[in-house]
Image 1 (tube, rainbow, N blue to C red):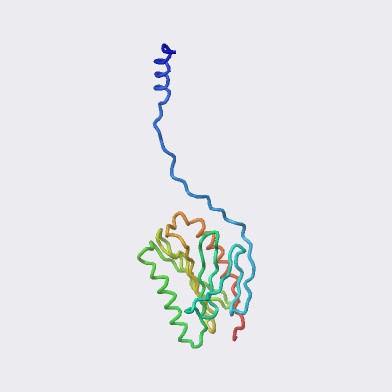
Image 2: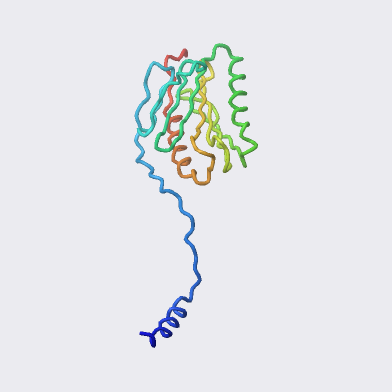
Length: 194
């Protein structure tokens, strides 16, 4: 055995010619469920379709106003916060528009870009703006407001209950963006004064 030891040592020494390279750091695989929608129909002054993997929870905080709520996505630790305002006077709309714009603009320090997309559906009387907020550390990546220009105003903002790292959240953000667009595309105002 002693006479083979130098041969085994030389064999081991020359058999490892490549350098060691560690494996790159991995991330958890995100399971994205199949798209399927249900109708949100209650006594609220608005209705829409939302995904079955979401759950609508009414806002019960003392500071909450009527018809406020969250569309919660427990599997993604995210929520779409919805706040509704009744338009009592045409001047109310200017105040609501400015509030929605300023909420989106608050993300400027962490955003690399904020894009605005007009929403216009004359048939359903749904008008507004969808804000896409880009940036790895932006707290909210999607915000929107919609109105019928007469009676109703609805604002939404998507947040995640995790530290902002939107690069790794990108698949989930894109996935939920489709759902938010679907929600807006199926929105109807209830009990509208036309």
